[in-house]
Length: 252
Image (cartoon, rainbow, N blue to C red; front, side):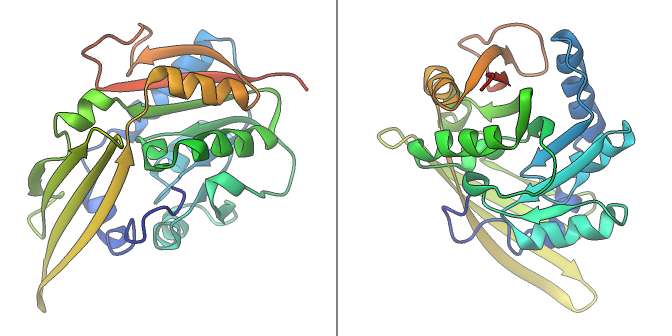
């Protein structure tokens, strides 16, 4: 997301869509649309922050929206450029220091726990301020986060295959309560005509309390409209593994 770890979303880019083939991207974007409707928001120009390989971007485009994407990983963006229609603007940028030319956006979405990759607490507010500078007055921001509960109970301890058996993966995570950091060692095996290729990536996520996120938003020029238990319109509980935050830019 913001380049804090050296080995993230590099080699995995080429197998990412195979790995994520089971993810219902359309359903995730449908939920965003429901949230917009819930708060009477009607965005036309949208920034897909941490757009990765462009699957969410594509779903937003299918809604008839004017969408641009930004991501820190150039390998992921290379895949996105192959998938998306010609002319869709994709930016290789650090979320803490966005510099996207053109008119402001009506909305920003940042999905799939991308902001957990902001591992320095002070950087979260920098991301929010960066987004705020690119939003129109009353522009909205919707994002999700893995809850601390999910990280500490080992949500990333998993293994399996991708869409087919050509991709195998095994992940092991370690949670550090003092730093609220979850380090995930991801091992991949890609089987092909030329044999099997093995590679590893180490990803790091930080767990944030709801109050930490709320404070960072408010300090950065946002009003928090709601915090939802993921994919619902209900408040989180002690058993929530993921939150959706909904915020609106305050008027200058």
